[in-house]
Figure (cartoon, rainbow, N blue to C red):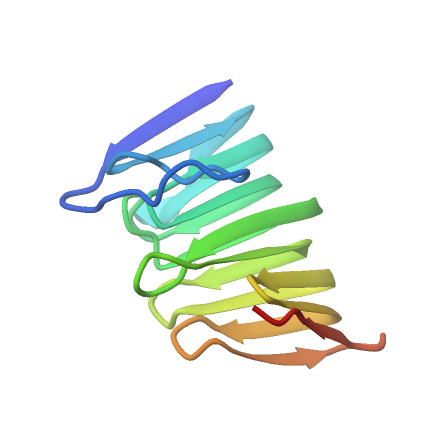
Length: 155
């Protein structure tokens, strides 16, 4: 088991939840193996991956954190399924997703799920082959070869 911890300046965590977010300003990466990408372009971790950050968290079999570890530009994870939780702007709501392959483009604020994808945004649940979710606007687009299911639960 490998643990990497990186301090983030001035970021406050969102509290403890089932897929735990960091309660401090630290990114913690746990996995069976880890190695750096060429030219310091990020890290790759494999086996029992758990990443906890103040505003996002993932569990997966394989993950790539592209860019600086403390603020990666892109997080790519694979698993059976891989899971992600992201805190929405304002810090009070979260989006939870799971699928075979997840890409979290942090700079663009886009979450892409591919392969038996499911997304839960509080009172709205989406199931599809693939989902692209624009976090800043809270809108989605689905694709793939299976029917889409959107469920809205009144507040």
